[in-house]
Length: 283
Image (cartoon, rainbow, N blue to C red; front, side, top):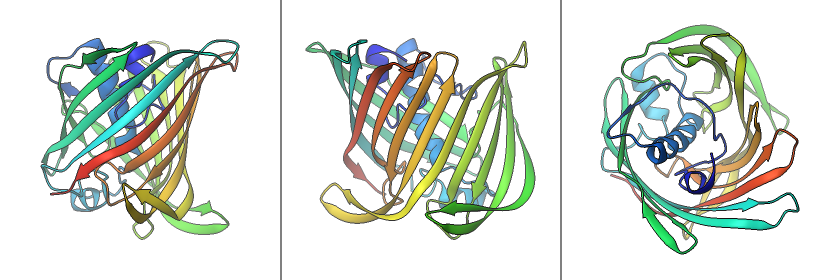
């Protein structure tokens, strides 16, 4: 994910290149597809893994809110050369609005503008419909209950329910294991996802998400809140991305801020970005 497309990542640019299941998208463009992919990376941070839709909606980062809720974020992205010098800076502003919540999942509307070299470009508005496990309307999520396991955070062992979800698409299949706590926010405490090529069956990417701190002091606009800190590492043949995320259940979509670094296959830093919440509204 390069240039303006990287800056347009609405929520978290951490997993650029992470292949999500196919989505229902209105009037898709290359710019818009990159934008939507970034939005859904953030959605996956707080997707619940419980088998019933009522529990899923109650704990989902968007599904727990009513339609009309929205958030506005700004992402500043710097592209750097081999000497670490900044060669390009872009600023994206993205508004994501919850349009609908059903038993099957959510629908989001995404609007964004990105400024590069003093020129502002408006992305074509996108509409995204996604099931509770990340599946699109024409894809089935095959869910397997793996029983119970503990996740340890700061020395504290937290009992979790573990589920395996497999979603197949023409480009490949993604297998995700999720450790879910009903009691402890942000509820999804760990997630491991691997995507395999449809033709060869070989692994083409992996993403690891883990909560590293709970109930941390967090400034949400001008108010003091508590939230969680997450570490997201995405690996693919072209390199890896490492992102620190701070999230709050009070904010639609969860994510309040993040810092991200992208590295090429040789380990050279190529891009870094910082996201901040500008405004939000809860219905």
